[in-house]
Image (cartoon, rainbow, N blue to C red; front, side):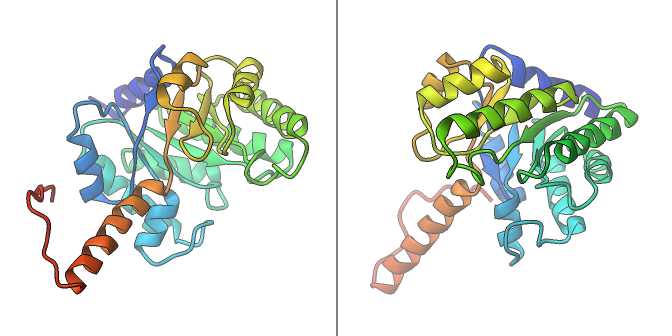
Length: 257
């Protein structure tokens, strides 16, 4: 498929009746391991995990060239659409999206960091315009940090903020609205009612319901952020501890690389 066709498929997966589960990866080896599963319909990168791979802290500390290069390597290594976590756009959301498309990326997360609404909407609009100029129906998962950076506010305040921002992002051309945080059925129900069915994306951490329940609630997408890399690193550390204690490698290791 062409990139335009791949991006159109990624958009379709976000709005389809079935919940889109994307397991986050951080390099070619992890991407290939996930893509080999028959259930995988798309893959998402985790910016935190890629930054950690290269020794950088999260929060746009990694050079944008390095982030885009790894995202491109991942996209070229698999057949399924790849959605890249591009943080807040590294100072120039439009140009960053344009360069990501050049690397074969079909969609992306773009976070608002709870900046003023007008600035956040302008960033989404710039990203959408850049994709349109490239002729790619890019699947933009516009993220609001209404919970992550603002959950000290009363419940009704952060939910109202997320809904206002989400609607504005959709009006600016975003495909979906990502509201990461640890909350339950009631909050998700309000977000979906306010933003739209199959228009809300969440992260599968903390109190977030299981995928089957998310689908019932009308959620479009669930991803897992840096947690997947932490699981892998935990397994590595555990086997190292076992070896140091005089043990041996487990039997049946799958040659996934």
